Length: 417
Image (cartoon, rainbow, N blue to C red; front, side, top):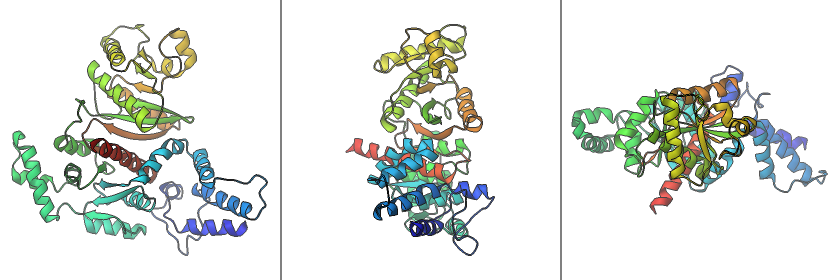
């Protein structure tokens, strides 16, 4: 068993070091060598690497009192103990591995993107396409000790024939907005625009960007060259906020500033769809306001109440109520007292906020002050798979969002065939 533990530690030391460990030791990079022979004490991977190796050896040697039959399940249980979001993402990651898709990463000269691309390649989650200055991407990869084998690197500024073809497509798409071919040639050198055109033309299956650019710079090209999905009038977002092991779906935290009643309904329907189809969770929808069921007057509560009625008509099978205050929505005792006999019999799982300020502030405060784990933003409403990363996203965040993007791309492909 000691040998099994030593072998597991030796193998782990040769794997790329996660961001959380680098941050804990204030390091930019760390790789196997004279200064790093075994994993650091704060490396969480030791838990689900060494323990199963020792347990497996104990079973093989006949020393285990309670032999483990399924070591893969055991590893997943250990992962879940460390991260509540892991269990939520496990089925999505497994689905992604079944049929990996091509994911384009704009501005890929960031070490986090390169590390994540290495992981999703090695784990069979996706086939990465790194977009940006080739020499810069290779330089960052060399500095971090990451191999680019198995990844495609594309420089939009020198990709001659495709750049010309994409420029002509863009000029045609934006001609009614006054775009000239010269402007189109310039715009397609932007990795965000190039990635969206790749997805449009079938050269990639998904786009995952935004790590080094501001949100509008990332989403604008997608809105310009990709159509809104059939049956949708807007793009919206949802964050999965995991609090004490319980997932909540917050919407819209990233796109719509002051949605109308009709838009709130569409946003809520999209979040419900994500909860049910992507994460296989039961939806119980609460529309949030500063008013509890008519306790206060104003434009906002009236708009929210109108959205609730529209949602009810669209999804009569889903329990929904509002307008209500945030604590009413998530504390069952308050809900029962303030709304006896109401449609929601349990705390809400989908929280629909009346505007962007409320939604954005809520998930960030829970993340920073409440130690909640956050997954997202998950965008919906576009005709292709495009997601925007948070600028402070970790390598694990990028890997998780890649798995979500691949699973979504799979569903889109299946619906077209």
